[in-house]
Each structure stands twice: as structure tokens, then as C-alpha cells.
Amino acid sequence: MNQPSRTLTFTDMFRPPINRAMSSLDRAFFRKDVYLAAACVLDSKLIATYRNELHGDILKLERLPPIRPIPPGITADKNTKCLLLKPDIQLEDRSSWSPKLHKLVESQQVLLTPFHLQLDYNYWTYHDIISAILPEQDQREIPVGFSVVGHVAHLNLRDRYLPYKTLIASVLIDKNPTIRTVINKIDDVGEENEFRTFRYEVLAGPDDMNVEVKEQDCLFNFDYSKVYWNTRLGTEHPRLVSKFKPGEAVCDVMAGVGPFALPAAKKKVWVWANDLNPESHRSLVANANRNKVAAFVRPFCEDGHSFIRSSSSRLLNSKRQITLRPKVSRTARTNENQKPFQQVPGETLKEPNVFSHYILNLPASALTFLPSFIGLYSGHDHLFHPSTGTKLPMIHVYCFSTKSDDNKIEEAKIREEIGQQLGYEFRGIEGAEMEIWDVRDVAPQKRMFCASFRLPSEVAFRDRMPRTVDS
Image 1 (spheres, rainbow, N blue to C red):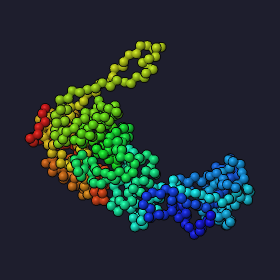
Image 2: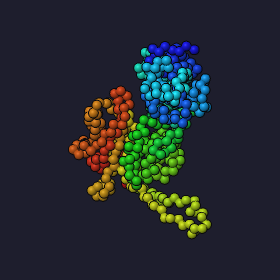
Image 3: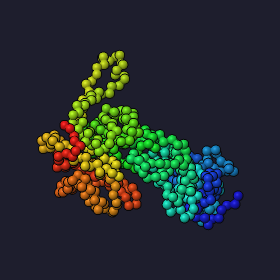
Image 4: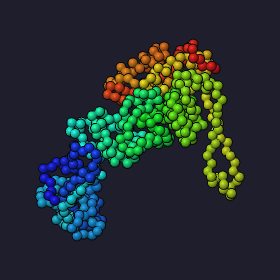
């Protein structure tokens, strides 16, 4: 076999072969022969030593170990290994050798030999393979961004990549061992229904959307085709949960399958978790039981507007409490040599009668739910500061807005919209204390925000609108 020209650049030598006419994935096509020099270390015990000494001469590439078995034709001990050298080190050209390599060869501690390196499909990454397949005009924005939900990879391919969707999906599965199914979204989330689900097509693997996701030490099982889940909120969920204190009550108005509710419940936070989607409600119930937090989670399947009011009314009259027994090892229960086992008194926790936090995570329309807070505690001002030490609840409402470098324009717009929905102008300290958190970029000119503010007393105690909260 003829060796390739030495005019190839280092990068070219290790790129996969190109086939821009490939219509179905041919893994066998991706093979390449690379001819290098190798330094055979005659004393196998010194392989680590010489690897360090020849650090500047050794081939350094990700996923390509430089220590290899000696090539055929070399007479040596079966444990002898060789070190792959950089392409610019040539056997016949001693001027390409480093002084250290010269010294080791002349002292016969290493033997330089040709090495035929064979690369195949398994070596190259997803990006490498796709770059070798897609037309050159589509190389600027190779599809690399996707969400992983359990074993499902969720793509949102641009139109120009749709002709290659099967190729892209096949390579994606090959290069990501945990992925079994690849789907492509074919409409916007919530375009056809209020449950924020979407239509999709399966590009590779089985049409199995029953997934398991682990987040914040909780396991979530759900049918991804029937409920809403956003992996990109994986840092936002713990950020907000960290604000909740054990023993507080939290009202999660659009709870989904419980990414806020269940981790909060693990902290011994009382959570009233609601979602309009019956499938989300079923998954929430099952996940609360599976994660052993059902005692702290009350699940509901109601309209969010009315739930804000009805949950507050019901909690006012709640007398719920639970007793947590300390865990006792099985050994302590059964050891005959010990005194008879006695149950240790547990900790009794009583549910508060007012919520400390409300979560409204429906960014497309959550701001329109804020009027439900007007008059929420009308007639109950005696329950709150200054009559007691209890503060009015914090509201955490998610929304979309435009994007700018410092978000100042967006913050002003969001603050104004919240004021309009509540019929209240946030001024002075109240306005300054409203936190508007930049959650993530959604599109080139669109961002998701979370506005956190304390419900103003003027809003909470105002005379109610027609929907009332009974004491």
C-alpha cells in the first residue's frame, strides 16, 4: 500500500474520508490508513519513563492512546509496547528527531519503526462524521444542539437539514450510548394544545417515549409525548428550590410532573402541586410516591386561575400534620442480645395555614394569572405582619421577553407588566427588591425570565373581585 503524500496537514491526516453524496449511513466507508513512526521501548518496565521523556515527540490526540502493541515483524518480548510519534517525525530524516529521541535510539533503548495506524467509524465523533457528510454550504451551523430526556434525544432541525435527518439521527445514536430514540419536533411547544406538548417524528430507534430522568436526587418517570419537560431548566429548578425553607408551604400552580415540587418536598417543604394536564397529574402522583415524598405533596388537577384562590382558602383551614419517625436499622429491631426495642418518639410537623411562595412556571402566559392574587387575603390581614411575624408570600412568575446586553429594558417592561396585571405600581423599595432573573436564552431575540417579588399588602388585602376566598 502506498503511503500518502507528506504534504497533508496534521488535521487532514486524521479527518474522516468525505462522502457528501451519502444518503444512508455507510459505517464501513469511514476507514483511513495513517502512516507514522513509533518508538518501541525494548524494556517494557520503562514505558512510562520514556513516555514522559519523549513528551514533545509523542502523538497527542483525543481518543487515541499513544501506547500501542508493537507492529508485526518486530522481534521483542510479548509485553513490549511502542509509543506513537507525531507525523512530522520521519524515520529516514534524522533532522526531524528531537535530541532526546536521538539519544535513546543511539543507546538502543528504543527502536524506531514504521507504524500503520488504522482508523474507522468508531474513532470519529458525531461532529467529525456529520462534517464529512453534509454539503459544504451547510457546514456553518452543523446540528449539534439537542436536548436529552432520559433515553430520548430531542432535535429541532432547521429546514435545510431535514433531507439529512435520518443520517444525523443514526450517527447521534451511534455516538451517544445512553440514547436509544431520536425525535425531531415538527411544531412549536403548545402550538396545538394548552399542555405544552408537541408533535414529533421518530428519526431513529423505537417510538418509546416513556423515560426516566434524575434531577436533584429525585427520579422522574413520565411519557415525554404527553407532558411538558425542559432539560434546559436543570439549573433553574434547584436555584428556585434553594429559596424554600423546611416547614414552609409552597403553591406550585403549574407543577408539571414535579421538578420544583418533589425536590422541595424532600426538604420537608409542604407543596400544593397543581397541573391542568391529567397526564402530568398522574405522573406527579406516581413520582411523589416513588420518591417517598407523598406526605409532603398534595397533587391537584385544576385550572390555575381558580387554584391560586381555592388553594389559599383551603390551606387557611388546614389542620394537617405528620409525624416523622426516626429510621431504625433492622439490626436494632432484631438483635436478641439487646434490650427490647422501643420506638423513639418522632418529630411532628404541622402544615402552615398560609403559603410562603407561589410558583407560576408558564412563561408564555403566567403573567395573566396575576390578577388572581388581587384580594387573595382580603379580610385576613390579621394573619400577617405587623399583626404576626408572618410575611406575605413571595411570587415567582416566569415570562418571556426580548433580550439585550444588560436586560435593563426587559426588566422595566416586566416590572411594568406585573404592575398592570395587579393594578399596582411598584415604587421605591418594593420595586428595587423585585428580582428579575435571567433564566436562559430561548431564541436569538427571546429570553426567559423569572420575576420574584413579595405580594404587596395593598394587592393582597384589597376588596376581592367576584371570585372569593372563604375563610
